[in-house]
Length: 156
Picture 1 (cartoon, rainbow, N blue to C red):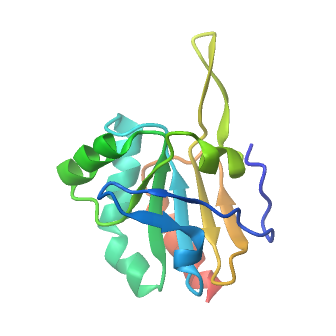
Picture 2: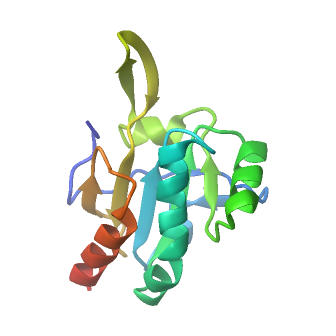
């Protein structure tokens, strides 16, 4: 699914977050980055996954990592989602899907025989040197943050 490979250089990205700030890959140079792509704010699986990263956020920070969520939702949607669930990390508004396409997660999906374009739920662990250390495809939202945390410990 994802067009990126473990060991490859993470594609640069930049964009606006839920608080109107701008972030880019280079903001995280020198520390591990957990970059998770999810389809849509306020949907069941995406809420479970986002809250799982919220609940593990302190442990992820202690492990030295930053967390960024990415979906094609606009800033206003991200604001409401982050406020409603108390999400302590940035949500990148990838409205033009540039970041999702660069990471190979904007793909054709199928639901009840209907084909459409959407986000393949995928997480990338980017090492301090900006290389992709790990990729999780077809992520199951429950407990995923714990898997990422375990991989972070292996990274150091």
